[in-house]
Image (cartoon, rainbow, N blue to C red; front, side, top):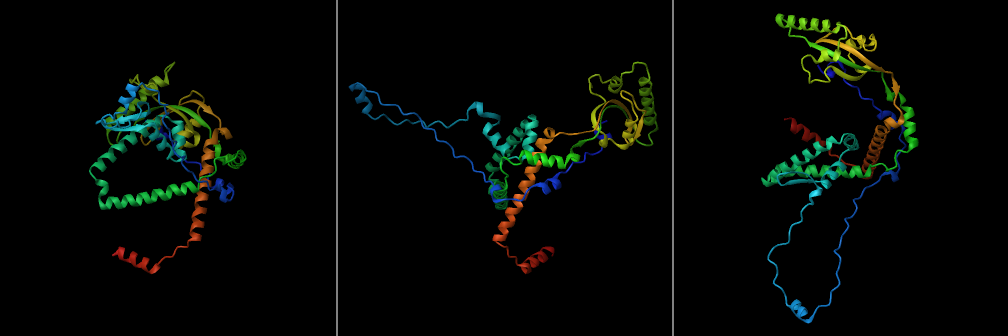
Length: 350
């Protein structure tokens, strides 16, 4: 039995409308463009010539035969290699570039869960291997593939450029902006009452299987008998014979509005550390234990700051993008041949 069985799908809290109404009109100075810093050139130190004895000077004047061996190829410093598979390496710079290209929400997710970096590295390695194989087979040179690559590159250039002209200033939003949006949306940050629950689940057999029904009923009666015994250990009964399942039956903290109504009605009537009667659902019987309760509260601004900053910056970026495109089309009005377009659509239907 999983938590999803008794928990309803989580409904996301949208702030887009309220934030969009708050964000101030755009100005030209907000359209920041990013430029990559020019690479620095490092020169080798120059040594002053030292005086040499005459014999050594004469020998030095005689030209030495040119070396036959080619200059060694530059090798990535071992400490800069994050991962390797076959001849493919992923360096720290590769990973930094990958993370920098992610959306702000994805970057925030990586920051909160460093284990996701391992998945990102594996994905990069897999992509490199596929790319090597495709290039080796000259697959990318096929006419149809080359045409798709051209369109993909064109789309990528357009998207990256639009991002560059629709990036809000680094200091946006201000503390005053954050406070105003937070106050206007306090209701969206209300955390409902939460319940810490454990359960014992007995699966229901297929209809018509009399033997399986009798077995399930016997198992349910056995569980109830154990729970009514003095000093009954709910967690131990939930584990059954599986002593390794230390978290068996533990559902953790569940918000009130995410619990299925059939379960919620029973939970609301329980006292702390008390156990419900078996609750019959489509998948079987659920016996719920209420361990603890958290009262409803409104999350503070520090708790939601990161989420709020991302939301406000995203709304401003979208507004800047729309304004840029509108101005661009205003300066260069498009002209459509509606007759030719209609003929093209009619031909495609035949």
